[in-house]
Image (cartoon, rainbow, N blue to C red; front, side, top):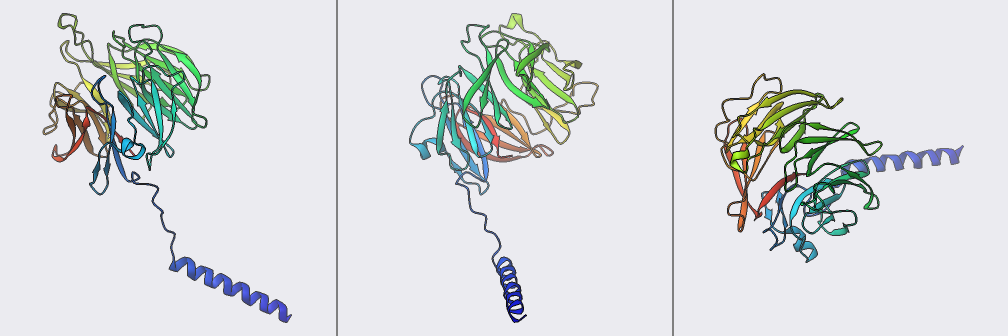
Length: 354
């Protein structure tokens, strides 16, 4: 009995001190790296003569240029087309160099390169342990374009899926992959829909000339913005905004622009669609019967890229395409310019740490 009492006392005492220790010393969040809190800007670099870079903008306002080379003492290559974050990895798509550079997203330490079955890569999307990369192949050959399927555990391409000319940005909705077929050196007018389970093409859906962006509105719709043909002038075609059923791939509605109007940069924020047209930004409700006639005051600009994020608009300016560009951040509601941030040569996209 005496032994039992002593043991019980020791157990209670241990629990008491463990509890006190836990209260007095709360868990400490150990920083994962210098690039954990903030967002990135991908910079294409001078075409064929330079290297692409990555800019990091910290939550503390500090701007760090060319972070990949700073960490790894090597250039990324030409052109840095896009970047995708997945887990603790950053996948940097380097177009002309025909590769995807894999780095730790928090430290930017290089971890590997994916180059086999990668040819003129453009964009990448990922889900679970797979990623899908759009490839132009030879831009002068409209028949060799494809999607690479990558096992993210091994960084190996496990399949390729042939698609039409000029696959660009992509969108995963449920078990389908939607791919804009913009055209390489030519023009295309379709969206490819791929079954992710079988990794096979379901169908190509005609939407409008030169589809340049697509979004999921979270309500069962995929919206595709088509820029139309802008050059040569005597061959121009109108832009289109297309609403498609995510479940069936059928086109529900098409909004037509004028023949000389070529919209770009479709975004979705706060329940509204946003796009850029002729240096102005327009806001539209998904339930609207017509395209908006008035632009959003204060958001004017001929931007190189545009993205919305939690009520703000991030727009890049490539300036003369040979010197450092910049990023401008606007408040969508007020149209107020909040901040201007220096970037690298030809800032192409903003990548948020979602």
